[in-house]
Length: 225
Ligand code: ADP
Ligand code: 5GP
Image (cartoon, rainbow, N blue to C red):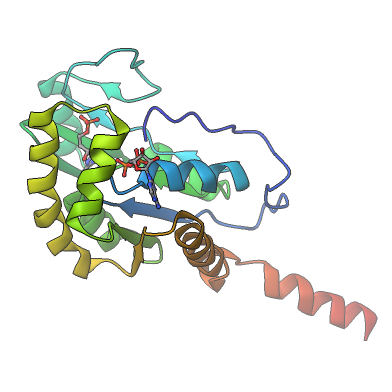
């Protein structure tokens, strides 16, 4: 998902500008091939004001990846120094490389009322939940192993070895699903999207993200009453 570049402007589905609204953390995890990118793309098309958390990593850039856009590519020493200074909201070692979410830009986006989407693994998601417990932690499930395999093959981006590795990893990742707040089975794409949309809209209505709303409405009662 880090390659997905959201339109950061205001589109037809954008939320009204509300300086008193605080942004929310939206974490969506899924075994590779479940359909996360497809669903996230749809969500961002409808709600273009999402920000994407750009992670730091010690792995080398791949293909067209750009520093500061897909990831902040760091040396191991620099990564560990940031970690030791507490500059990550969460961090994890994945396939022998370090990955972490820088805290300062995340806080800035949230304070400005931007909802933030993440592409992090389940260990990272559970760490983030400890500090950002009002966020939305969604786990997408494939309907079955056979369907996941069909999608991985149908996507045509992975070699046979990678497909087998992803299928083996899927079962392990799904054990972590019990830690998440919402489960969505991606069988029918339209239905799964409606569920994701409903979870997101319900999450945004939590009073913690709308500190000035009630005060403003009550004030109108006093003025007009
Ligand atoms: P992920 O980001 O989770 O790895 P993708 O979004 O790349 O997964 O989806 C994997 C493949 O499955 C893609 O070819 C996509 O078009 C297809 N796909 C996604 N959701 C569904 C669905 N509900 N039914 C059938 N195919 C789907
Ligand atoms: P990749 O190297 O293929 O881009 O990512 C490998 C894995 O690392 C993916 O599962 C991705 O979700 C995860 N990942 C990417 N950034 C972060 C991060 O900041 N924190 C954590 N915990 N995982 C991350």
